[in-house]
Image (cartoon, rainbow, N blue to C red; front, side, top):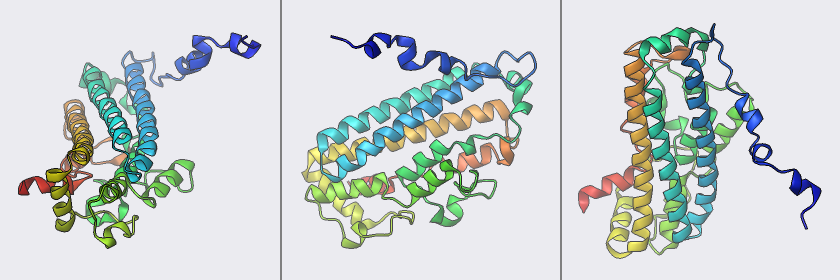
Length: 277
C-alpha cells in the first residue's frame, strides 16, 4: 500500500517543473524575443553535459574491469547524447546575427569558456593544462583559469585533471583484455597530457586484428571522439555565422580559437593506428 509521500509525487513535483521553468530570465529590455531561446539552449546543454559526466563516471570503472558489454552500452548512450547536442545547433541557428546582437551586450563578460562542466568533460576525456602552448586558448588563458579560483567549479575541473582520464581507463581495458600495454603507460603521471605513442598503436593494431569484441569498444571510443569533433565543427560554424571573425564574449578570440580546437582528438592513437592497417 502506498504511503502518503508516494501519493504526493506528481509529474511536476518529481521533475521540479515549476522551478525549471522559472530559470529562463532574460536581461534585455522588453525583453528581446530571442534571448529566451539563447538561454534555454545553453541551459539544456548544461543538463546534457551533466548527464555525459554521469555516464563517463560509470564508464571508467567498466573499462578498467574489462566489461565490454557495459562499456559499449555507456559509450553508445554518450554518442547519442552528443548527436542531440549537435542537433540543438540547428535550433540556435534559427536566430539571425541581428537578433543575437539585440541582446548580446547583456552577456557582459559571460562566455562559453566559463562552462565548468564542459571544461570538466574535456579533463575527464584527457585534456590537461600541462600540454603547453597547445592547451592555451586564444585569450592566452588555460582551461581552468576562466573559473573563479577556489570555487567548487574550478576545484572539480582541477581534480579531474589529476585523475586518470577515460583514455587511461581505455588503456587499462586493453591490458585487462590480454593486450599488454607498456608498464610505463599504466604507471604514468595522469596529470600530464597524453602524447601518442607508436608502441601503444602497435598494441591497438594487434587488438583490432585478433580481438573483435575489444575492437568494438575501441571503435565506440572513436565514435565518441568523432562526435565531439562534429559538435566542435558545428559550434565553430554557428559562431562564425553569428559573429563573423569578431572577438568572442568575455575577451576570447572567438572563431580563431575555436578553429584551433577542431583537429585535436582526445584519443590520437586510435586515429593514428589506421595508417598501418
